[in-house]
Image (cartoon, rainbow, N blue to C red):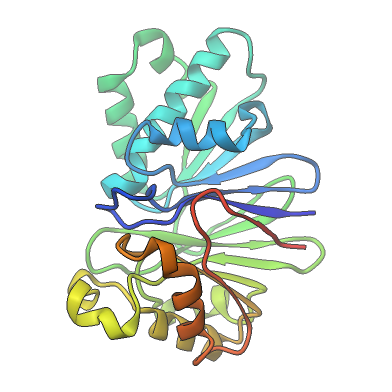
Length: 269
């Protein structure tokens, strides 16, 4: 059974939930991590889920905004420490575009202890991927794509499994038609929904280049996605978010809607 474990669901400045990031647990027990939030809070989120670092040898980083990339430094530090203690076997691979790769290399060199940084480039490998480039991993083929962000270079990805499952992460900005092939008819579509449509004047999502639940749901319907996961939201309505966001989504989308809280687990089948 494949599972999607949600580590965080909030936007950049969220204080009542963790920043948006998650990992996949695959049939063989291996783990695939995406982004890591904005600080060492990622270590707690991973600890709470029982995350086994040894089983995670592959990670994807979407872009270099603080709420997605700073936690990656802590993940690298943790993995390097485990390697130095003989508690991590094999290589740890990080996939990202060129801008993020340069950021990670510079930040780790500036902030990690020498013995930890010594692992970067030898045992912790940061791979640049280009728009449309496919990487064959043990459990799936990963194809990275440029979302053509107007703010900072950002990549999403599409995972294609041997049994035909298509899992697409659109990043944390609105869909771009450039990426239709990767998102259309996805079995699982992960999309940002900054707030409800009725609250658009309160949270100003369009000024930040974000979507509301309405737009994300209309998109999923247009793309004929089977399952829609909404994340990267405001944090003022956490108590009612799951019910209210799902209710709005169902007005525009006929598939299955998931509005997870931090640490929720979604079975992918």
